[in-house]
Length: 178
Image (cartoon, rainbow, N blue to C red; front, side, top):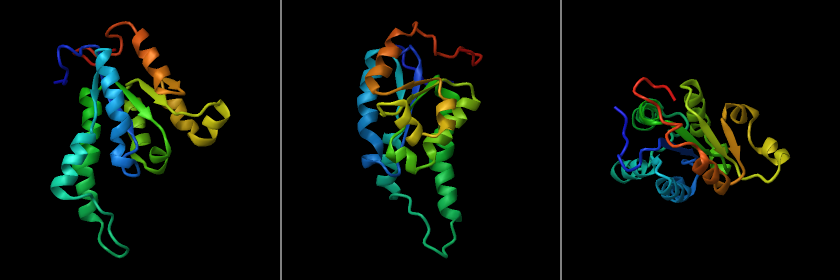
């Protein structure tokens, strides 16, 4: 069953971007984007709060030291982060906003989520703040660009685009069709 408040019925949009290497798990851009999406009646799916709560209760996951067995780390990451995020994309997301910055470039989760969404036929809106196509190609892989439904040089460009979309066009129906 899809999570969707009645007053934010234009479609659920999962917010994907760097967390491991981002300041405050990337909460800053997600908070601003969530507020803008709600103004447009989209429902933002922001996992930052879940990760912060997990870290408060269990501590930040720490990579195993050289020579240490990585099994508990891998199991923890898979259960509490990877599987949770992918399930949220599969079962509750009508689209993804992918914010690609240095923290996303250094990690693997953002591109993995984009690939997963692409495989599920979920639209991907890529925001990468590079002023020219040449800089974009120097900093963002061609693979990620190709996965994306649309590319934006700023969040303002993205918001303008989302405002103009016909109401409910990204929303999946009961059968998973857009």
